[in-house]
Image (tube, rainbow, N blue to C red; front, side, top):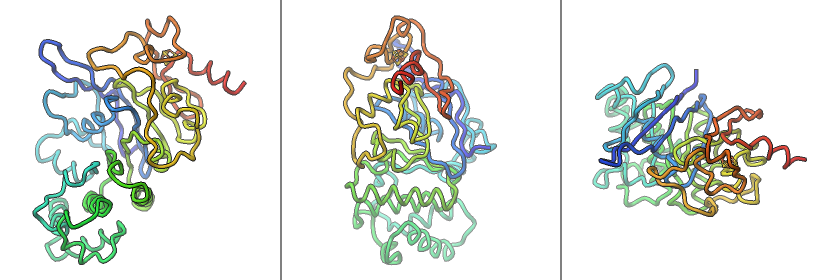
Length: 329
Ligand code: SF4
């Protein structure tokens, strides 16, 4: 059983007279225990909304209209109130780009981690205090006792992100969703945080989903990448295959000319000619056709289905395999 299974997830935004606008469209993927998947795309592609929906964190005007999200055998969409809260932040955790979003500036970081531990476990105050030090040590914070007594603003950005990771780990999650966790950090710190997350996923067999617009981070972190465009998953493949031979024109455009794993960290998605479409103005057929250099007549008429691509991946493009043959011909 996969740690996380998202099936046919569909999210709309209720926009008054404009009607429900499609934000996430029929997205399906699974992440095995200890596996790391990247959700990659431009801003507005639906990658963050997919993760928020998976966590049950959507607020009006956003709502899920179809699909399921399973954590092991648990159907997250069937949970409400306290049951959902116990799972969220417990069995499934989330790390944000800005740790200050989750940390309380007025409380010492050790107390905040301790509070999370006590919320999700049966440890008493003293045991939770000892666990805090273990966790801080485990996420590479030297002098854990002193750091536990610090307030968030007394720590560097990288240190705060480590505290967030410690907090997310405190309830022993099965799945960790990381939303651009390194974007606000300098390149050296980014690398260290990515290394830390990879180590954690291996040692604790935590399934991870990394939402990122940074292909360097994705290459260094993921073993599988799912590319989103206009709310849909357009390609998914093991990281090496995807970087070596992208099958979807959008993936190819994201990667630019240098399709290899030597992309430096901090490299953003290159600009692609044209704008990503707004949810209310999606093109007919393949949503990418107005920007696609390979578009043919059929592309504006028929939406390509997401189909197996033969190398353990999936791709949604009428001409994906043809171009693949040409590239290697
Ligand atoms: Fe381009 Fe057509 Fe493939 Fe869409 S289906 S990505 S427009 S070639």
